[in-house]
Length: 286
Length: 137
Image (cartoon, each protein chain N blue to C red):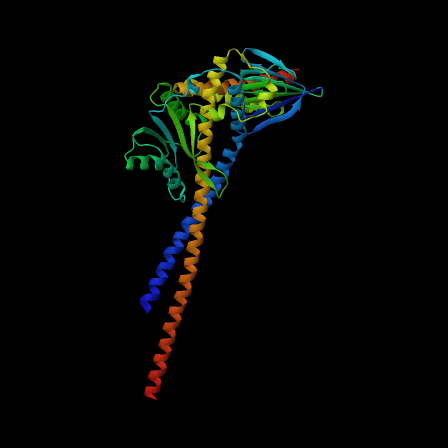
């Protein structure tokens, strides 16, 4: 009996330690989450306005630009934005499951984030590059990645660039998303009936020239979209981690409660038997 | 009288959104004034001063690099910086310029970094010019 109570006590102690750790991680994730969410949401108006502008440009003009060029897809590039660390629930699993849609023979990958890189290495996919991202990514840092993707596309090494990232919806919901970023998809450039087309009336004037304005705007659009997707992924990561850690802490607490109950029961039983033994012994002596 | 819907957004926030009478902005080919019913136009923005007139009241903003889309009733400004004149802290801006210049002098920077530091200096200078001019004037 005594050994049993000691076992239970030991288990309670170790679960308490685990709960402390998960609780601490939850707090850290919550603080980071707030910052990351703010950053992700703050960028949205800019991204929206930019797609709107690009859409009306696409409608108005017959401009061609290398980044708009649609080619038959023989090689595809996928940029996988994942997290560096685990313990964030099913976030990475869900994201990486989306990659099954691509044909391994036609697809090459660029990884941003360690988990994605590990997965790609494990499944023996061809990886072109592996970028590291800091916790609070800066525009200049993600620009390196987007520049690399643009270069690959312009060089003709790949005919399509897709980004796999986790779209941040709310603290509880994050959806793994695949988005084609190059060639700038007609769905984004050719409009869906926004008022921009009506009030513009005719074609746009460009200053100094269409090539120069589009030459500046389109790459910037790609850079910014990828930056925004990285921010979204970060916000999703911290949200998912906070939720996962919260449920881990809750589970640990429940477990402690159950074990304490059992411990008390066992202890009580032991005391009862002991009293019984003493009483019996006394009666026998008696 | 028709008005213009002006929207200025930066990656960090929506900096300005209102109906105004006139906007003067620093285009890549020089300053240009936009009135309602302007012909549709796309241009690039360079760091400088953006002037808004609304009901006879003028507001000044320092803006960074970016793009402008103009239609007859809407002006959309996408830029990496937009600060109102009141919010500019001259000392802080001065310090930022010195820091950036020091980095340019003392560190070995890659092309990307040089470009980004130079852009930062440009933006800071735009703020400074705006602040100083209105102090005197």
